[in-house]
Length: 471
Ligand code: NAD
Image (tube, rainbow, N blue to C red; front, side, top):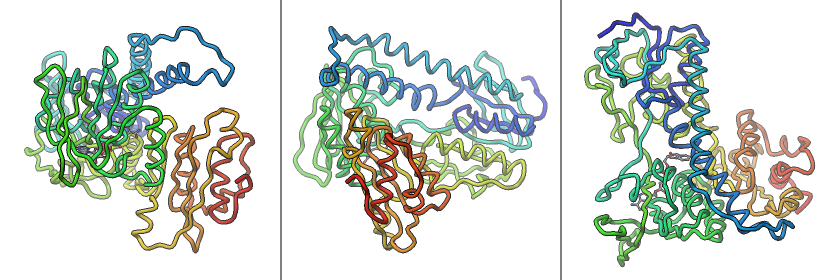
């Protein structure tokens, strides 16, 4: 084993949490090493998550639109064909460009990128089993664990990423399945259901709860989303649980029943996507050796400053508390480095946006109506439909609504929930507003360019404390 000298910081994991921490640490002048075993940087998000899924979502949407939504726009198209191999290639090209870009940024900021699997030897020593063979030992004043998460499996179904797949397999199918069943109507389930249904699969989503969208989505918005996605051809079975599955036959048989118990039914599928959540991934770190604790859900236990029981070992991203979102991990990465460098750091967990990249998109920030109701705070709701927005009308893309919820006494914005075209970009304005403690009137009295979709946002704010103009 070669000794590679001391580092101010060793980061285990080169996903969004780890690589952002590495760049920030390099900028701050810390001698930093980042250990990653995948062979490419960027973790789940860049390699098998956010980025490849957005490529497929964008291009499958274009395909679907060209097939079904051109005539009324005055565009006559001839033969439209899917070239799935090329669509996958386009995705791979985007991913490759971005992972290489991250590698360049690490180099530019003087970070040692160590390709291999890291594990603790003692509190200040990390051993790396190098991908190319051999071993390297790193000594560190500070250590950050950023090893991310993995898809939760389903008992009885063997994930082979071909017939029984997680999101990883759903981004790499080599042909369009005839029948696809998605277990779990959360964000992963709905984004992948959209991709494959647009490309021609018959897709059924089975969701345990009465509402789709996963935790956090406002009930009213989730209802609209289900209606719109249903019109696009996705079938839903809500209040339904998958009890067991059998993948030994030529098709996969899933036994489903009402969530509260009741009659059983069998669903057949050529491909089953398991999308029932993700869990922290911390295997092989030898954490027991140094006494770092996990909670009952496998999350590494930390304090407000991301410190484990060992104050110089911090944890950020999916393998600890909070929503499993890339942008949350990025915020933590910057804050963790600031704690190391200056003793101060901050992330506002009450103001982290969520986006579902279906069409239309769904996006929200702050609390949903059920949460606000449960908190006992008196509130007002203001909504504005995209069908009354001039730009949405010219785009022939009018489904959806903007919904504001503000404190009835102070008018301070408590939550914003959007379903509509471009919701994922629009939510940034709501996030900034909540971060600045804005009232709905603050937004309503801010000039918004005409004609833009953002005017729907402004008018929903107007509807919250007064009346909208165009509805
Ligand atoms: P999720 O927790 O968001 O949703 C899983 C859904 O599966 C839930 O609605 C749950 O009720 C349902 N479910 C669980 N067991 C079931 C069963 N036996 N039968 C039927 N339904 C069942 O999980 P996910 O969609 O897998 O996403 C995992 C994580 O990745 C989440 O934290 C998500 O926010 C994140 N993610 C985010 C994005 C994005 O922001 N665009 C995209 C992908 C993933």
